Image (cartoon, rainbow, N blue to C red; front, side):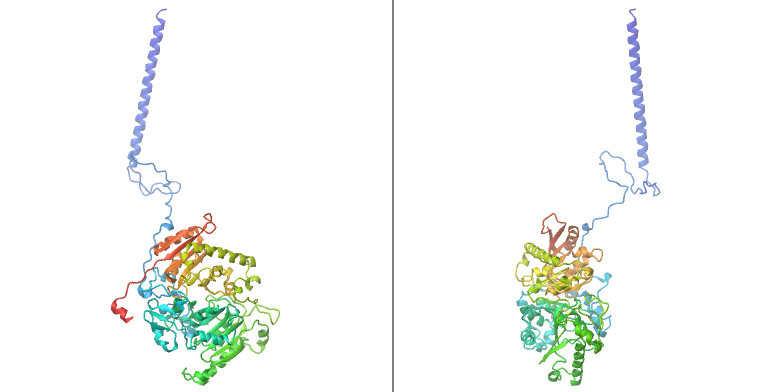
Length: 633
């Protein structure tokens, strides 16, 4: 049939047109539907969202939507979580200068604060630190005209007047050769109340009575030191003296000592222990220090006994010694002076001290090398009794007691309690008895030797960072804020410097200050959440190993740095070892104090987490005083 193919073609063409129309219609409907949905959603987004909107997964929506724009960039951050807290390192620190009136501020020995405390037993002259809300957040200024001190040994005899602008002692002690003003500087002739011929001649007189040259005497303590001339002139004999005096009417005694480059601290024997361990000093000295040794049942001599090494010496000159000659000049009666000397003699005997000699203006006693005979004679001398409870090395705000600190047990009457020390200089590297006896858990002889070698390596590395450590005489007064075994100081022993080794009281499980003294070095206990008992601009260089990690969560990092700024001289150097995260925060704080600092790699290379922060305090001083006020000063 010829028509069949035509019908089939027409049918196929009709079906194809119907399918295309259906497809187009469906597409239009879908597009229209999605367009209307989009318009509806956009119109809702323009409405404000109420505070009662539903929360998603427990977090409330905090921002309204905005109209959709083709130029908006996609944001893939999770906005349903609280924002991250700002980084501490991003904080901008700023520490303005303090008022000029605070240029000699000593926070824990502040004169105004001290007046609130009891005057009995000189308690008001002890440490009384400000509360946290009283801490200053400013930088202590140097007085106008401040200059870098004279270099040692010239500094022993000279200091710039502008650095310690006080003439009181030049008038008060004019006839005793303590200090004189010569133009723009002070001169220290080396005199003292009881040594008008000078400290050298006075020390020679002592040497005629006990041997100061054989190395058996290395550490000494000078109570009521004045301007520390005794300690200054002992240094040439390889004897290191810790000198101290209170902040009192003789303005700036300790400040003068430190300006001369001589070890010293503000301090007083009153109602608490001195901040030193037991058996620390080979020799103790008092030259007219005005301490009432015989009063309070001999309490102050009992404290000297605690810090004096077995076989150590106590030297006394001035009242009441040789009272027969001086009683008129001392404006005291012969009966009063004789009674005072009798009291001292009685207390010394009760402590089992032996009086070696009294010649002219000097009297010398010696402590026994052990307590075998002393315990036996308690039948004669009922007091002081032997202490029972207290740790003899605990000495931070520890109350004095009228009890005798017992020496370590010995098996023979000729044995030295606690172990015999080597003579200087062998003493520096010999194993300290506190370590060899095992009295410090975890610290062995191997630990000591390895620590000494470690610090030799570290100090060599330091000298490649701070070239001023290499320059002889550039630094004199050094402070180690976390001394441990004294390795840092030992590594510098041949340089013309001295180091104040501080052992933080927070490191009480490693109370190593006794080891420091057994090495023939000096130091003190310290809580770095408080100020140090020293004047501003005391130290040329400060070292701190892991100190800020130790004080984490104990006090504010910025308060410790501000204290470092207070006691550091202008243009002084700082080296801090610690974790890199700690140092980054410290560097940010230092920038706010206008220190120049940089973080460098550990001596073992860049892969160590511990790094080293080296910094220098910039030179700046207070503005000059008005002319009239300056003339009055």
